[in-house]
Length: 144
Image (cartoon, rainbow, N blue to C red; front, top):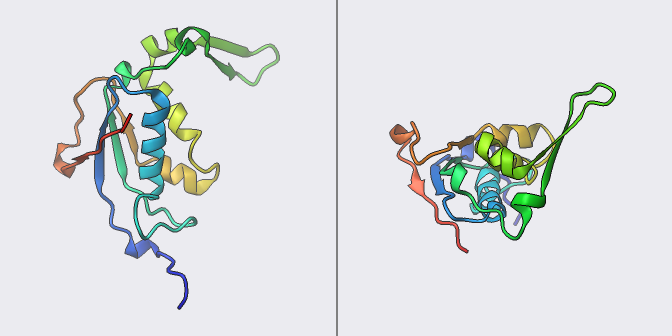
């Protein structure tokens, strides 16, 4: 008996909603990355995108444990000499909480075209509302 390998036409995609309010950023990101990769499905195949669509709501209410909110720093380089920018996560969470969640999830996905395809199935929203009710998403609980 040979090992089952999923083909793109075998994949059935579902939609899931994750409420990030009061949950640690790393837990939410790990669960979302698992759903995006499709590792929760029995047909998971590493070289095929078997994942589902993920909607994350309440990104502004995600929690950073310990003193990370004050100590963690986001670095960005413009590409020019002397262009290293730094911003503490406390101000980044106030300005763009969606970006903080997206960055955590992107770091847990493969760094190739497959990972980029998986990342395109992610939607992150600042508040509790999202415009994807027509897809009838299921709620996925993040266990603490």
